[in-house]
Length: 334
Image (cartoon, rainbow, N blue to C red; front, side, top):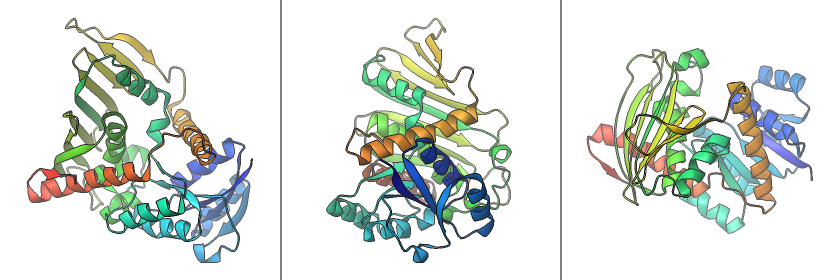
């Protein structure tokens, strides 16, 4: 079946979703985008069915919507979808504040809409392999997790001072924009977070109102402890996950997964899940995988993409991290 899909917000992430859904050969795409230049560029690059300047202009029905607007617009755009009985995917983070989200979740349940949240890292082959090995008890009972995701962000987004990233209210900064990905991975693998402590600051990057560095500690309901470290100015690009269990450790270094169960210093079972591939092409392919999973889920098939409830919990952790440093205390997650 070919689905008529409405992309709400056609900036950088919106474009990745357009490529992803068109790549499934299961979708026709229309866009809502107020920027004329973006409209023009997208219509010249892709086969766009309809282009709207705003939601008010929409005069036809769609099967699904993908919300790719800045995070401070997510609540309003989710309300639009619910009002129009439109199942949807919304980009991360779910919002920039908690207010109104419980009503969104309740209304989605009442109308039985199919909704997921766009944490693309769940779709990567290496993330799935990491989770599978942990769930299959390769390292025993997990007790600790360490994550370091740090890079020279301006190198990859030289426009960072003029986009959503520059302000907290639009979903920018090391916590709202970056750490939320790692928090989702931990919720996906470890379960429910209960307590959060954090330190953060803007140490280097100029021209923004947001932090470029954060150190977040989380305790989960199963007793597991986790640390997330992010800085967005260092020269080396580091992305490492290490889970410590009672039978060994499993480590992910970018796309290479490895295992250790002794003190020899040798990591075993090493496998690079991106060997010989272009990283940006792999990143874009995650959007294709996500699009197919979302459409499968809409059709009633298995779909373990992030739910509204998981993303709501994620946002609680993010906001607790902010509160923890401001109030100088550990925050409990209700």
